[in-house]
Length: 254
Image (cartoon, rainbow, N blue to C red; front, side, top):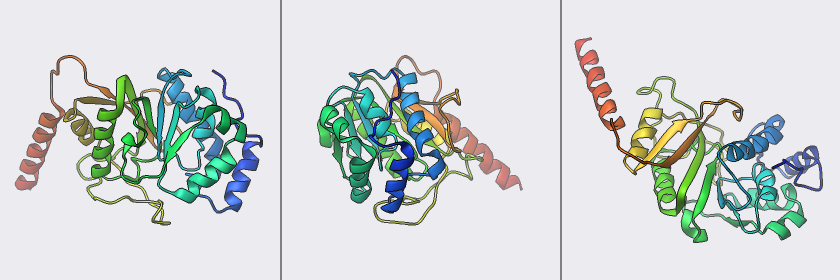
């Protein structure tokens, strides 16, 4: 599948109009086009077809949606974005009106990570630059929603900032950090891959970092989450318990 310009205007025109409206672009202006292309690219890498049902969590002003929607059949794209004004600007500016009429994307503005609002099972869930701001409580809710609303063989593709030091660099707060529908304050968080692996394992899911950096941009890494199949030969939870035990002994000795 090709990557057509999905608006009547150039990307520069879209960015200019969004910026003039004061719409948050979801990241640096210079990476607006790259961000959309990389989101489409990684979905294609993992098998996106025109028939795929795609849920875009935190779709924002549709920098990814404007690339993904034209590639899908009618009524196959679904977006959740709590920032109503941001989403409105995205639909009106980022998307070609003819694409909206032809593809009939559906949107919702719930802030509870409720994937069930569309009453649809998904082949792909994508969440770019969401876990880089979300708490473990938010991540847990998204994993549970994915488990409920995924089709067989579905993939949850998300991005995160990896904690440089897993134990000490992991975010332990319970609130969103960064711009949102209720905050204009910038910020980001880091998560331990081991902790995410534990959260997935507890829900019968597996997670791995995408080894290829072809679709990377910025400092975040892509993760792909799927249903766990086959026999487990080890437990990330047990590994974590051993690490914490060894750390406790080390601190006690000091």
